Amino acid sequence: MPELPSVDELFKLSTSNGKVETVVKIPLKEISNFPNHPFKIRDDEEMELMVESIKNGGIRQPVIVRRKEDGSYEMISGHRRKHASELAGIKEIPAIVKEMSDDEATIFMVDSNIQREKILPSEKAFAYKMKLDAIKNQGKRNDLTSAQLVQKLDNKTAREKIGEEFGESRETIRRYIRLTELDENILNLVDEGKIAFSPAVEISYLSKDEQNVLLECMKQYQATPSQSQAIYLKKLSQEGNLTTDKIEEVMEQEKPNQIPKYNINYTRFEKFLPRDVVTPKEVEDFLFNCVEEHYNRQKARQMAR
Image (tube, rainbow, N blue to C red; front, side, top):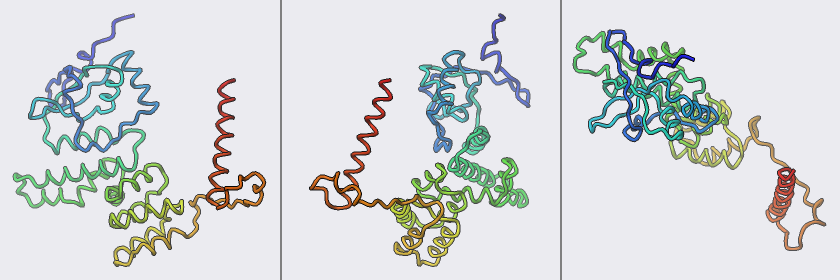
């Protein structure tokens, strides 16, 4: 079997301007993550496969980094490969060092990660916001003296530019960016699919205090706002009329996404209850402990087979 080419041979490439980019080996400890990197690194099955691949064949695609003022490096593209290498016990990683400004690095980082197969709503939201801010910053450069050029880099056109690149409308880009205004715990519910995208956008207009109250009510009533309810909450908030009582009034309404509540006829269990178990809460706790104990015994029997 012929010997495979080395990483250096594979990735010592010429760029579009004819410049040769050389792969170098950099110790992992010298590479820091990109500030506020919006893409989550998950220790899932896909990560396990990447770790095994690195153990068996090494890193086949070099990461992209830039040099920091202190001589260390900052990761631009390759955070998952870096994490997998750490799990695999690798000390060095092949990298291409690029010279980039902060805005250029941000745009490159977003563009190289956004095309992943699985992207969470929160990842899109913060990635779009970071790229939008970077494009706007580029539009404020002192060397841009043409009013027409500045206009092309204004807020609206920047959203259009991002939308065209990623196959989204300008309005969709705006709505995703609104998610960055959500409380972290509510945003997690969006990522988990427990709150739909459209209601989440409306909720983002609530103040942080109002969102905290809403979150507690969602836990209490085991439900999330529907689209119409979220719009109503936003309207009350903007009018200055959104109170805790109003939020509770909305959330206690039954809706399709509400977790069903079970009514138990406790009299059926009276002959099994100890004499000191009297209140509904004590009965509930007693029944739960019985079910849990039965479940654990069943599980132990299955494992012993």
